[in-house]
Length: 274
Image (cartoon, rainbow, N blue to C red; front, side, top):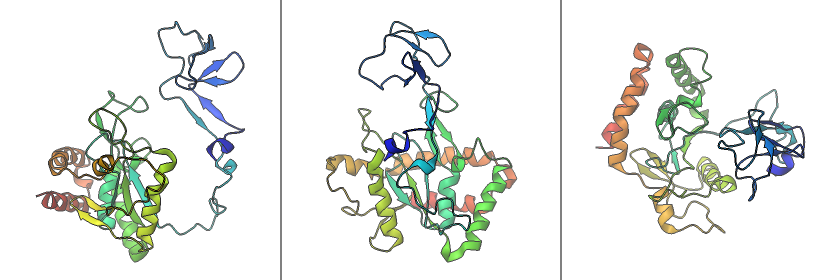
């Protein structure tokens, strides 16, 4: 379905331009073309010292072109929302999926979201960067007020508030290989979330949130080692205790505007971790 979405009306950025007028980037084909115009507008050949495409090359297309998009996706009256999903790119520590204990705990998850930096964002590659709600580059007012807004929204919604989950598709083995296949197989995790909303499956309580019981994730047709699944759902208490000082440093940035409810969530996590 992704390729059906990309048949026309596509904008590519930071890619190389082939002599045939098509786009190209490293890894797109087994063999490199003999000549392209690189992302800076220069002639490029396989002998060039720099890559032809930028590491943050991207494309975009109208969502309306997706043949399976929900017909209500632009409904001006809005639609009920059952689930909010936060996430970050972490090669360790953070498991595949975690469900928040409560709305306040979910806000804490979003407020402490973190990723290891890549060529797509600021900082040396591999450093940990806190990016609350993935909004750091986009929030146009004090982030402390933004946190308060989330709490107020939860108070207003009450029992109708969506469940909150946190995902990490990028956990790696000690050898540096991704443990989870990602892409369309992420729908297996989304299925578990929907089953949690519908009350069809249970969950295991951990110090960081609720996680899938063994066997509740639909892995039918997926060849994934049991050891990999165990690692994907592992919560290492020592690693999570080591997260606490970094979260404290992160929260200190917001000064007096940091909601007390976030401080409470951090203290409760600290107690759960022992």
